[in-house]
Length: 207
Image (tube, rainbow, N blue to C red; front, side):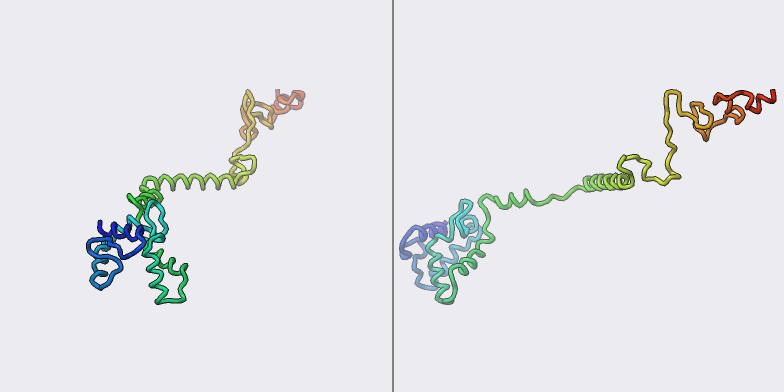
Protein backbone atom coordinates (compact mmCIF):
# COMPACT_ATOMS: atom_id res chain seq x y z
CA UNK A 1 0.00 0.00 0.00
CA UNK A 2 2.92 2.33 0.66
CA UNK A 3 4.03 2.29 -2.96
CA UNK A 4 0.56 3.32 -4.14
CA UNK A 5 0.49 6.24 -1.72
CA UNK A 6 3.93 7.23 -2.91
CA UNK A 7 3.02 7.31 -6.59
CA UNK A 8 -0.20 9.21 -5.94
CA UNK A 9 1.66 11.77 -3.83
CA UNK A 10 4.28 12.34 -6.50
CA UNK A 11 1.56 12.92 -9.07
CA UNK A 12 -0.34 15.48 -6.98
CA UNK A 13 2.42 17.48 -5.30
CA UNK A 14 4.42 20.17 -7.03
CA UNK A 15 7.63 19.48 -5.10
CA UNK A 16 9.33 16.12 -4.78
CA UNK A 17 10.75 17.05 -1.41
CA UNK A 18 7.46 16.46 0.39
CA UNK A 19 7.17 13.23 2.33
CA UNK A 20 5.33 10.46 0.48
CA UNK A 21 6.07 7.58 2.78
CA UNK A 22 7.39 6.90 6.20
CA UNK A 23 10.38 5.04 4.76
CA UNK A 24 11.83 7.70 2.45
CA UNK A 25 11.18 11.10 0.89
CA UNK A 26 12.03 12.91 -2.32
CA UNK A 27 14.51 13.84 -3.48
CA UNK A 28 16.39 10.67 -2.63
CA UNK A 29 19.76 11.49 -1.14
CA UNK A 30 21.52 8.20 -0.48
CA UNK A 31 21.82 4.78 -2.07
CA UNK A 32 19.98 3.32 0.91
CA UNK A 33 16.98 5.58 0.18
CA UNK A 34 16.91 4.36 -3.40
CA UNK A 35 17.04 0.73 -2.30
CA UNK A 36 14.17 1.24 0.13
CA UNK A 37 12.08 2.75 -2.65
CA UNK A 38 12.88 -0.22 -4.90
CA UNK A 39 11.83 -2.61 -2.16
CA UNK A 40 8.50 -0.82 -1.78
CA UNK A 41 7.90 -0.96 -5.53
CA UNK A 42 8.79 -4.63 -5.73
CA UNK A 43 5.17 -5.73 -5.90
CA UNK A 44 5.07 -6.09 -9.69
CA UNK A 45 1.50 -7.41 -9.88
CA UNK A 46 0.11 -4.40 -8.05
CA UNK A 47 1.84 -2.00 -10.44
CA UNK A 48 0.48 -3.85 -13.45
CA UNK A 49 -3.08 -3.47 -12.20
CA UNK A 50 -2.78 0.22 -11.36
CA UNK A 51 -0.82 1.85 -14.18
CA UNK A 52 -0.33 1.90 -17.93
CA UNK A 53 1.33 4.42 -20.21
CA UNK A 54 -1.61 6.42 -21.64
CA UNK A 55 -4.23 6.33 -18.83
CA UNK A 56 -6.79 4.05 -20.51
CA UNK A 57 -9.20 1.37 -19.24
CA UNK A 58 -9.58 3.05 -15.87
CA UNK A 59 -5.90 2.97 -14.97
CA UNK A 60 -3.60 5.81 -14.02
CA UNK A 61 -1.28 6.98 -16.76
CA UNK A 62 2.47 7.13 -16.48
CA UNK A 63 2.39 9.84 -19.14
CA UNK A 64 0.88 12.34 -16.67
CA UNK A 65 3.16 11.64 -13.72
CA UNK A 66 5.83 14.07 -12.59
CA UNK A 67 8.28 11.21 -12.35
CA UNK A 68 8.13 10.94 -16.14
CA UNK A 69 9.73 14.39 -16.37
CA UNK A 70 12.52 13.25 -14.08
CA UNK A 71 13.06 10.24 -16.31
CA UNK A 72 13.18 12.39 -19.44
CA UNK A 73 15.80 14.68 -17.92
CA UNK A 74 17.93 11.73 -16.83
CA UNK A 75 17.81 10.17 -20.30
CA UNK A 76 18.68 13.42 -22.05
CA UNK A 77 21.69 13.89 -19.84
CA UNK A 78 23.04 10.54 -20.99
CA UNK A 79 21.76 10.80 -24.60
CA UNK A 80 21.50 14.46 -25.67
CA UNK A 81 20.33 13.51 -29.17
CA UNK A 82 17.35 11.48 -27.94
CA UNK A 83 13.95 12.99 -28.76
CA UNK A 84 10.79 12.70 -26.70
CA UNK A 85 9.11 10.33 -29.18
CA UNK A 86 11.96 7.85 -28.95
CA UNK A 87 11.99 7.96 -25.16
CA UNK A 88 8.23 7.43 -25.02
CA UNK A 89 8.52 4.46 -27.39
CA UNK A 90 10.94 2.79 -25.00
CA UNK A 91 8.83 3.66 -21.97
CA UNK A 92 5.73 2.15 -23.56
CA UNK A 93 7.44 -1.23 -23.62
CA UNK A 94 7.56 -1.19 -19.83
CA UNK A 95 3.77 -1.43 -19.75
CA UNK A 96 3.22 -4.08 -22.41
CA UNK A 97 2.57 -6.74 -19.77
CA UNK A 98 0.26 -4.50 -17.72
CA UNK A 99 -2.99 -6.42 -17.15
CA UNK A 100 -6.51 -5.02 -17.35
CA UNK A 101 -8.37 -4.64 -14.13
CA UNK A 102 -10.40 -7.68 -13.09
CA UNK A 103 -8.78 -9.78 -15.82
CA UNK A 104 -10.64 -8.17 -18.73
CA UNK A 105 -7.92 -8.88 -21.28
CA UNK A 106 -7.80 -12.51 -20.18
CA UNK A 107 -11.55 -12.87 -20.71
CA UNK A 108 -11.36 -11.32 -24.15
CA UNK A 109 -8.53 -13.64 -25.11
CA UNK A 110 -10.50 -16.69 -24.01
CA UNK A 111 -13.59 -15.55 -25.91
CA UNK A 112 -11.67 -15.13 -29.19
CA UNK A 113 -9.47 -18.21 -28.90
CA UNK A 114 -10.66 -21.15 -30.99
CA UNK A 115 -11.71 -24.04 -28.79
CA UNK A 116 -10.68 -27.59 -29.75
CA UNK A 117 -13.29 -29.35 -31.84
CA UNK A 118 -14.41 -32.82 -30.68
CA UNK A 119 -13.60 -35.74 -32.95
CA UNK A 120 -17.31 -36.36 -33.59
CA UNK A 121 -17.77 -32.85 -34.96
CA UNK A 122 -14.73 -33.24 -37.19
CA UNK A 123 -16.10 -36.49 -38.63
CA UNK A 124 -19.47 -34.86 -39.28
CA UNK A 125 -17.82 -31.95 -41.07
CA UNK A 126 -15.74 -34.32 -43.20
CA UNK A 127 -18.85 -36.27 -44.22
CA UNK A 128 -20.70 -33.08 -45.08
CA UNK A 129 -17.80 -31.82 -47.15
CA UNK A 130 -17.51 -35.14 -48.99
CA UNK A 131 -21.22 -35.03 -49.85
CA UNK A 132 -20.88 -31.49 -51.20
CA UNK A 133 -17.88 -32.47 -53.34
CA UNK A 134 -19.76 -35.48 -54.72
CA UNK A 135 -22.74 -33.28 -55.55
CA UNK A 136 -20.55 -30.77 -57.37
CA UNK A 137 -18.93 -33.53 -59.41
CA UNK A 138 -22.33 -34.81 -60.53
CA UNK A 139 -23.41 -31.31 -61.52
CA UNK A 140 -20.28 -30.88 -63.62
CA UNK A 141 -21.11 -34.11 -65.48
CA UNK A 142 -24.69 -33.07 -66.23
CA UNK A 143 -26.06 -30.83 -68.93
CA UNK A 144 -27.89 -27.58 -68.14
CA UNK A 145 -31.15 -29.54 -68.15
CA UNK A 146 -29.95 -31.29 -64.99
CA UNK A 147 -30.72 -34.72 -66.42
CA UNK A 148 -28.96 -37.47 -64.42
CA UNK A 149 -28.24 -39.57 -67.54
CA UNK A 150 -26.68 -36.73 -69.51
CA UNK A 151 -23.25 -37.33 -68.05
CA UNK A 152 -23.18 -41.02 -68.84
CA UNK A 153 -21.85 -42.73 -71.92
CA UNK A 154 -24.48 -43.54 -74.61
CA UNK A 155 -24.23 -47.26 -73.86
CA UNK A 156 -24.90 -46.64 -70.16
CA UNK A 157 -27.98 -44.48 -70.59
CA UNK A 158 -31.30 -46.15 -69.90
CA UNK A 159 -33.83 -46.18 -72.78
CA UNK A 160 -36.04 -43.12 -72.81
CA UNK A 161 -39.57 -44.44 -72.65
CA UNK A 162 -42.70 -42.38 -73.04
CA UNK A 163 -45.52 -43.89 -71.07
CA UNK A 164 -49.12 -43.06 -71.65
CA UNK A 165 -52.22 -44.48 -69.98
CA UNK A 166 -51.79 -47.90 -71.63
CA UNK A 167 -48.02 -48.00 -71.26
CA UNK A 168 -45.30 -47.46 -73.89
CA UNK A 169 -46.07 -47.69 -77.60
CA UNK A 170 -44.16 -50.17 -79.74
CA UNK A 171 -42.77 -48.62 -82.93
CA UNK A 172 -42.66 -52.04 -84.62
CA UNK A 173 -46.20 -53.26 -84.30
CA UNK A 174 -47.99 -50.18 -83.01
CA UNK A 175 -49.18 -51.99 -79.90
CA UNK A 176 -49.05 -50.67 -76.36
CA UNK A 177 -47.58 -52.10 -73.20
CA UNK A 178 -44.17 -52.93 -74.65
CA UNK A 179 -41.39 -51.47 -76.77
CA UNK A 180 -39.82 -52.55 -80.03
CA UNK A 181 -37.02 -54.63 -78.54
CA UNK A 182 -39.57 -56.60 -76.51
CA UNK A 183 -42.08 -57.04 -79.35
CA UNK A 184 -43.27 -60.67 -79.76
CA UNK A 185 -45.77 -60.11 -82.57
CA UNK A 186 -45.21 -62.32 -85.64
CA UNK A 187 -44.02 -60.55 -88.76
CA UNK A 188 -46.94 -61.94 -90.81
CA UNK A 189 -49.37 -60.28 -88.40
CA UNK A 190 -47.80 -56.84 -88.67
CA UNK A 191 -49.59 -55.96 -91.94
CA UNK A 192 -52.95 -56.94 -90.45
CA UNK A 193 -52.34 -54.88 -87.34
CA UNK A 194 -51.40 -51.86 -89.42
CA UNK A 195 -54.69 -52.02 -91.30
CA UNK A 196 -53.42 -53.51 -94.56
CA UNK A 197 -55.48 -56.13 -96.48
CA UNK A 198 -55.30 -59.57 -94.96
CA UNK A 199 -54.37 -61.05 -98.37
CA UNK A 200 -50.93 -59.52 -97.99
CA UNK A 201 -50.31 -61.57 -94.91
CA UNK A 202 -48.56 -64.90 -95.59
CA UNK A 203 -50.48 -66.57 -92.84
CA UNK A 204 -53.75 -65.55 -94.49
CA UNK A 205 -52.69 -67.22 -97.76
CA UNK A 206 -52.03 -70.51 -96.02
CA UNK A 207 -55.55 -70.61 -94.64
